[in-house]
Image (cartoon, rainbow, N blue to C red; front, side, top):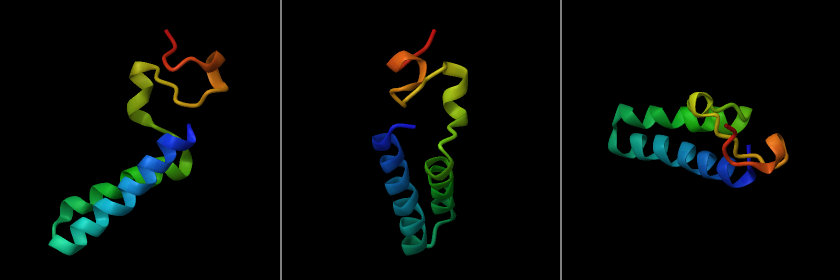
Length: 65
């Protein structure tokens, strides 16, 4: 996973639960998903589309077909 992709996911994953806590809304729990994917580097939503965001993998291509 590219460092920019990981950073964006981590920031979103921290902001969403914070928003959910501040507004007392359970939708903030969705923020745990980006935290998990940033921590593990596994993005299950990218699998059907064969999207790769890390440069060294698959000859540096963004999308492998």
